[in-house]
Length: 245
Image 1 (cartoon, rainbow, N blue to C red):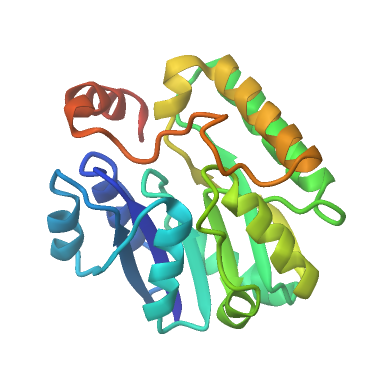
Image 2: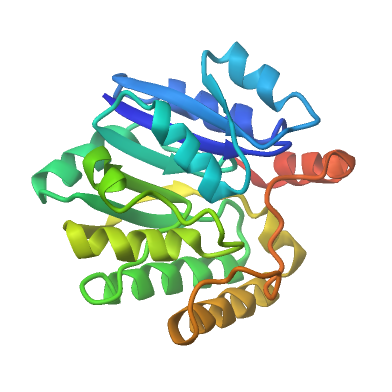
């Protein structure tokens, strides 16, 4: 069994799409755990309606850890609430995961929409993650790991404001085999990219440099908004209808 763990905060506009994509998977031996950080919208109600197990969350690192504590699967799959998975995604991911005898892994990402900047970002993402696979492993938004390894490294650092997945994967790769799977992609929501894609690229580049040269980000030096403020619901809804498949 694989345990799918989703941290949420006011995700009523995006979570249903992810859950429907999970129900449509060809691979069926899974449980879905939603770690909610106190949503004020219908996120929890939606999760319950889809048969998810609900646990208290917080920032993404804490939410993932809380979900892992109650997980029953030998393999954990941490995925962001605004992602979408093609129907054969889990089946093919796990097949490759086992074939390469991996202990922790990530994959490529796609942004729905026709903007050229999205295609540029996707290529840069894949090239960089593939190039650094052996000596500086990366995975974000979508991380698969063996439960034993997650427990061995103590889970995610809950004190970090940004980049907790960066250090999580690096720690895991020191104790197990990491692999990047470029042949598989999940769809990431362009909701933050919609604001200013170039700005997002620069921000994440600077954050990467900071984490590499200085260390973990435990302050609001790089502003990152987890989840959705309920008051922005109408605006986000229009983005979802326009851009997500």
